[in-house]
Image (cartoon, rainbow, N blue to C red; front, side, top):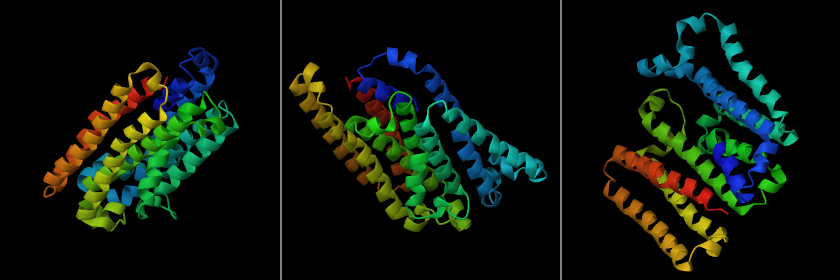
Length: 287
């Protein structure tokens, strides 16, 4: 959410007076974020309890596998409904666009885990919907406190970072699936990683990181203001550096092809060190 807020603030030329004018909306967005994301994790645990209880360690981490909560179903419902009411109520401070965005986030996040749709067991939809509700839509929420939706989706740089946030949300879920692959296979959960298997899962994982690294090249092309305060040679070197990172990532993961977990760990390292750095520096250099 904060990434979206600062990305839009940068697009608006770092006009700090806008923050003061929209302080109530920003506060509401923070409260919504604090309530909404825990809700979608709780609803996930609620519907995953029958599967998690099969694994001793996962069962310990899932509150809904606890005997105390199993004996008090009304408490479980109260835990789940409270953040929904708070999120929808505070979205009204942002306006109709906020209510619409939070409503969509709630629906996608809820049915990611809940039956009968349960996106998390539908090929590729499990990844895309996670990218939306756990990352992309929160990014939009951050921008929405400063500008209406109609303006946000007309800004190429905002759309680029929105796409990057979705890809990052997809990667988070896919990485988690790879860690739980054997457990999901035992529980007969039809996640993307289970359907694809080890070989094609690694191919998809590498593709996600490659696309996120490639976003820096699109950024350099879209951010025309860079050329107004940076020499052209610096911009060109940055493009070559981005291409080099993509090639190096492919070479390194090709060398690690025999080690499923090593490729996953190296991809996590690249995401943490390069992609997050690019996102922060990229937003600072928008204007």
